[in-house]
Structure formats: C-alpha cells, structure tokens
Amino acid sequence: MSATARAGLVEGKIVAITGGASGIGRATALLAAGAGAAGLVLADRDEQALARTAKEIHELASGLVPVEEVVVDVTADEGPDAVVGRAVARFGQLDAALNAAGVEGGAHPLDVCTDEEFDAVLEVNVRALFRCVRAQLRQMYQQGSGSIVNVASAAVFGVHPGLGAYVASKSAVLALSKVAAKEAGKRGVRVNALCPGLTDTPMLRESLGVRPQIDDIAARISLGRIGRPDELAEAALWLCSDRSSFTTGTGLVVDGGRVG
Ligand SMILES: NC(=O)c1ccc[n+]([C@@H]2O[C@H](COP(=O)([O-])OP(=O)(O)OC[C@H]3O[C@@H](n4cnc5c(N)ncnc54)[C@H](O)[C@@H]3O)[C@@H](O)[C@H]2O)c1
Image (cartoon, rainbow, N blue to C red; front, side, top):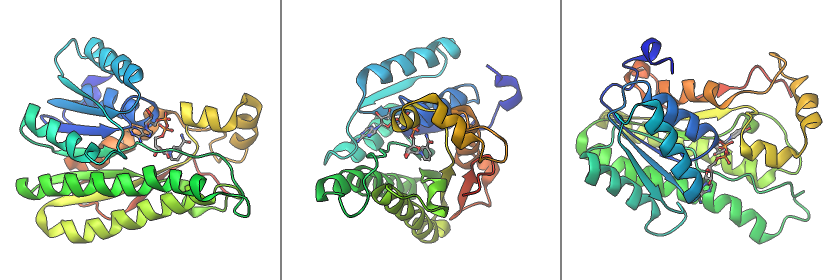
C-alpha cells in the first residue's frame, strides 16, 4: 500500500461506494482505505465479491478502517436510502459518495434492441443512480458539505454502434451530474462525473470476451493500452476529496487519450 504518498487525501472522511465490490469501485475503496478514510460503506448486489473486497481492505489497513458492507440492489425501492442510512447509522455522516454501480447491457443495434434490453440498462445506470444522488444530496445538504462522483463513461464523447442504451444512459449520468452540481453548489456540495475510457475490469472482460480484442482496441489509445482500475480510482478519489474543492459539474475524462 502506498499510503504514505497519499496520506490525507480523504483523511477522516466517510466514503460510500456503490458497485464497491468490483472493478473501479473496488479499486477506489482500496485506495481510500490507504488514504485516511475514517470509514467505508461498500454497497453491491454481489454478496460474495463484496465480502472479498471488505476482507482485502481489512488486511490492507490492518483492521483500522471500518467497512460497512451493504448487500443491496440499487434498483430496489429502498436500495439508495438504505445505503445512505447505513452510513449515517454507523458513522453519523456521509462525506463522499462514488456511484459506480452500473451495467453495460450487451450490444444491441437499435433496430433490434428490445424495450426490456433498453430499460434494463437505464434502470441501473440512470434511474437508480438518480435515486442514489437524491438520497446522498439530502444527507449532504443537512451537513452542508459533501462530494458526489457519478461514473459516466468516455463513450459519451464517441460513437459506439450497438451500445445505444449504454451511451444514452451514460450521457444522462453526465447531464444529471451537471444539473446536480448547479443545484448543490451553494449548499456546500460538489457533484462531478468521472468518464473512464476502457478499463480492465470484469465488466470489460465480459463485454469483450477475449484478449486479442483488447489488444486491438489498445492500439487506438494514445498510451497504447487500456486503463487499470487503480488509475481510475486515483481520479475518483481526487474528485471525492477536498483537493478538488474548486471542481464541480465537470466530466473528468480518464481514458489514456483514446481517439475514436
Ligand atoms: N470498465 C470500463 O471499461 C468502463 C468504462 C467506462 C465506464 N465504466 C463504468 O464504470 C462503472 C464501474 O464498472 P466496472 O468496469 O468497474 O465494472 P464491474 O462489473 O467490475 O463493477 C460493477 C459493480 O457494480 C455492481 N452492480 C451492478 N449493478 C448493480 C445493482 N443494480 N445494484 C448493486 N450493485 C450493482 C456489480 O455487482 C459490480 O460489483 C460502471 O458504471 C461502468 O459503466 C466502466
């Protein structure tokens, strides 16, 4: 753990992460644990992966960073309020929230994309995220402070045939983050979107299936490779932290310089 280099980035803060069991959410949780977080609330529908991540953090931080595990489907009616409620019940506050729970939904050209396929993506990526943001804003308004980071995608700046529902959903995440930032700014709360490029997570592996395709795509990235989850975590945690105190309403692209 490179805790020394990052000591204090989220010193004393309570950080909640949806999708905290895997990929970018997990990497941000690990980074936060080594960067002074006073407590973590990890929410995910994958109970086993969540337990594994919580155990990793326990080992990494020698048991010094308490982790509240919330096994929840964020699309459930009570899901988003439950996550914030557990943060407040255990730690008394919520300083930062990373909304990383998301689905890609597979490739479906628009002429054959069914209502169900479209709705399934929007349900998680937009409706549930909106409900998470709403619950987080209500708590942070009471505190008069907080930082919310919503994971959108660099895909919103490109053209991606077959991914209509996904790109529409992530465009909505970016737009919603900007509106929330405007509404929340004078109440002490910042809201930003993180726009990752291709990042080596279970979601991407599942989406691409085989390694050669990843290498092919990597060739079109300026840095010649896809991103690592820990590289996205650096940006996510910076946005969560007070070090980004003058940044709100932005979509931070972290994509290795992908063109096209
Ligand atoms: N990996 C990439 O290349 C990439 C690129 C751009 C954006 N993103 C976005 O980053 C975010 C994190 O993705 P990742 O790549 O780390 O994927 P991942 O699959 O590794 O992690 C996503 C996590 O979200 C959880 N989750 C999904 N739906 C949920 C629900 N309804 N309730 C609770 N938990 C749920 C999953 O169980 C999983 O643990 C997503 O929003 C994704 O769209 C990823």
